[in-house]
Length: 355
Image 1 (cartoon, rainbow, N blue to C red):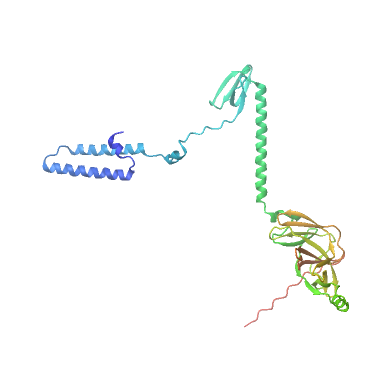
Image 2 (tube, helix red, strand yellow):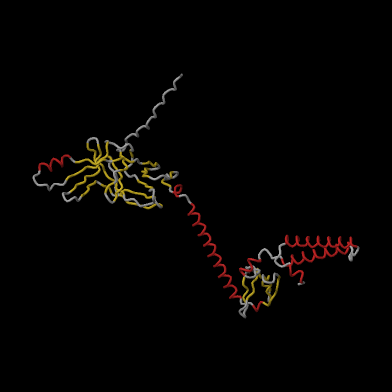
């Protein structure tokens, strides 16, 4: 590398040409000064030749020294090596233990003609050099591995598709009937899915027990409260004695629920008695019906009955650590043959008034 070219190391293309323009301007000024004084030692043609030569040398030097786009990457990771293509084909195993990777091969008499993937051309070798048993075993093993790979890919794709399935649209209660996405409790009878409404239960002091406590000279009779739902009948009516229930929880937890057979007492439906001892210990008594729980999906549970339901009033309640949740889902079971109540009519909107 010449001394001039060496001075341009590290310069950008723009700064280099700016320097060249300044040099050319100085040469022109010097030439003009010499021409005026009559001592011009060079001609205009010589001046232009010198300027063009300097520019050409500098441009060639920059092109040689211009770093490639991957220079910084090569400095960090070392020189980039060309990746050799992965050979794909059949192993033609020879008796000496070596093998040839062939895209295909043909056995013709005492010769074997094969297309070499390594050299990308057809070649021939004597058939006696080939270990045919080892070649067949290698082909069988390769086919087995390929099949395992295909099965793994299929399993992975199936898993990915299952993860993308919308749970809300995938839980079929009956043909064409799907569980709604909202949280709550639903009763299924046949192909019908009925959302159950929550009712608020009250706690009332048992006045009869209170009278007994007053009469008794010894305070050993525990006090008793009644948990009941106002009203004699639930608004939701079922026509089957073997309904199933589906619950979707908001936080994905597994609920602990009980099915309670309510007793109609006056204008209320009694759910349980709570007895409180003089020590403060409480016991609850409910008429419950066995339910079996099945997990359908995360936060979705199915409950089936262990016995048929007799006509009457019922409530599904969640059991909390402190006892029965006072917000319960109530429904009634009507005797067979009971006509379905007509849907409630909407109140007619008043006619617009004329002004």
